[in-house]
Length: 300
Length: 111
Image 1 (cartoon, chains in turn yellow, blue):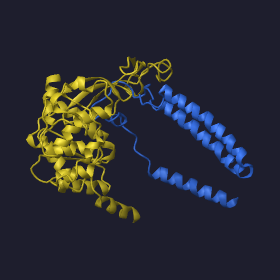
Image 2 (tube, chains in turn green, cyan):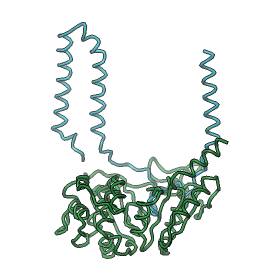
Image 3 (cartoon, rainbow over the protein chains, first blue to last red):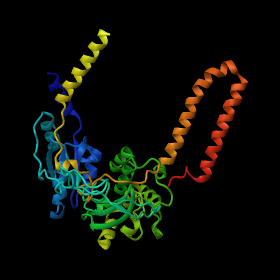
């Protein structure tokens, strides 16, 4: 009895959605979550529904499957082509999940990327902290630290194409030491997006959301004029200064005043190297997606 | 005593029942991997990195211990008066010299 009451109450809450944005869908998805009663989660761990917006190109198919499997079961997938309103489908999927349906099975095999093999009776490891392949991944080895010369472990990973803080489609191969980006390489450029994703309002809302000012970003996307420009103080002066275009703060102020950003596309690897991760993410969002796309095409 | 045992038994039973009911499903290989927006990592996440807040943490612990000395001192202070005041002043003075030294060495600079 009580359990059923809990199910009914859970079904009335806003659906927790992780969204994978394909070509030509960025502005539509952002508008949807600014208006609709649904929560856009920042990682699949908190979501129950995978919203696939647009046609995902073949090169991103494995990434999509990986994200699908990273949503803890029970889970469901909803496809959206941008024509009708997906809310009815999202709510129906949410109601099914909350009623206790088992959802979709995994798409990828339940195998580690490499066999977990090493020294020891059970193949448990190597020598000391080095060597061994725990969970199918080798241990990180030391590399030169560009900041203070300490030899720390270098961690190489590919982020994207559906990282919620990066332009959809962008894949970066980063070598991190702690939170410091030691080297960066553009593997794939962002998906093409129509002009509405580059509108000053949309760009400002994206950057504000990243700075933790979600309600302000929603108001901007719903068409309310910004009440004040105080939000630009969340960005330090001089971050991302690039030639004639000014720094990130200048670009955000311009967007809030309704002016499109100007200036040449940045050199992405040089822009990111030596930065901390949070700086890198703010920087990549301080240019319109189209400019980042040109920069990524040039750097690939 | 018997009440305590009863409460402990009830708590243990409740924990056991809730653990049995809310047992999470075992994580599959994709779920055990870190989330990189669809990307993957080449190495295991266990790594040595520079913990940049280390010196600040040590200074914090030092001053926290100083506060612990001040609690018994506050009790004695009522009876002792000016003498206790002078003693605590010397103690804080020595600590302040250490603080100034650390400042000069740049341990409070985020690096």
